[in-house]
Image (cartoon, rainbow over all chains, first blue to last red; front, side):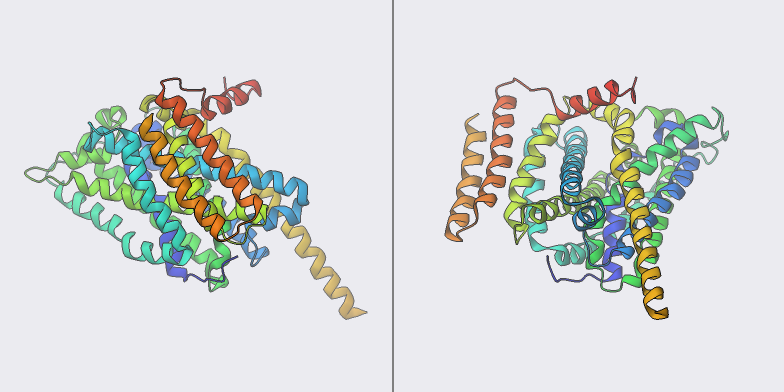
Amino acid sequence: MEKIRISSFQLFLLISGFLFGSTVILAPAQGAKNDAWLAILLGGAGGTLLMVVYASIALLNPSKTLVDILREKLGKVVGNIFAILYIWYFIHLASLVFRNFGEFICTVTYPETPIVVVIGFFAVVLAYTVNGGIEVMGRLSELLVPVIPLLFFIIGLSILTVHDFTAFLPILENGIKPVLSAAFDYISFPFGETVAFLMIFLHLNKKEKLKKVVFTSSAVSILLAVMVFFRDIFALGADLMSRATFNPHLTSLLIPGLNVESLVDINLLIGGGVKISVCVYAAANALSQIAGIDDYRKLTRAIVTFCVVLSVWVYENILEMFSWAEKVWPYYSIPFQIIIPLLLLLLSIRKKGKTSKAKAGSRKG
Amino acid sequence: MAIVLAVFAILIFYDVQKFIREKERARVFLLYGFFMATSLTVSLLLAAGRRPSSPAQWIEAVLKMMGVLK
């Protein structure tokens, strides 16, 4: 295991970049239509709670990765089986983000370029980043992630002349059900996916700041998602927004006399890049731990290659990708994002209780 | 097809010669071989236009079988 430490600011930016990820492009909670802002707030609150669960697991098991925790709490055999499932989940998640990125670029920017070429070039850069280690990833996020809100403000201010500030009304036109459903989707994408950070939290230099970092980054992410939603709905209107695929890109096209399309591409490059790097790092690290390999870098290129192939293989077209992400992904993610982490939290609390009792007993004795 | 083979040949040649030079353990070769062999097989099938059923379909089928999805 690396003896490298990252600062709380670097972790804050890594988590923020991960949460911005493809959400800056794909407009989360779109199912709630013009009530998506409510879904983002509700889902965001639930997602923050979930992230606090992950942070608590990390704090109750200091200096341990997800693999160590699984092995310790569930036994070596069951723990290893669950760890392998998590490796699959991280690889799958990385490949989905690769595909999102590829589909976006091939739909709006390079329609003549084969998707595998776009994803392949992106993968080369990311494999290099992951091989640099968590410290390099942290420094890169310090450099790049602040660009995302900056670009949001540039696009938001440029679009001020094209707006309808009442477009999000009426509130709860279709009832609360679509809002709750979209809120649940928003918990699993992107908040629940931060379970990958259980492989990274141990590298934080000041452990006492972990919960604060998690809370701040999720608050910033929710705020940005709500602002992106309002910017898009003011510019596009509820009807067009519910039918368009890449809303932020469409919004950027409306800016009169200015072509800022590429700024949206940069958002996805940065956010998606952070998300894929974290997932590949988590997968490679977990796999090397299970197999007893001293350096995860030996497996990075093989895992990234597999992610690229999987990203092309996993869906036949963009429609299947969106449909699967909306209908299957939230349910498929429940065990990885909610059930297993809650089980680990309960077992960690129980163990801590036992240790405290034993200490108190030995003092009395 | 030829491009796929060429890309994989370069990747494998680059990594494996490094592994041999550093006298890596068998499990490194095994894991590396597993990922690369799977990737190569799927890539060749995709290049040949014979897309095998994807993990997304398997997962969906399992969830339907469990009654989670309709």
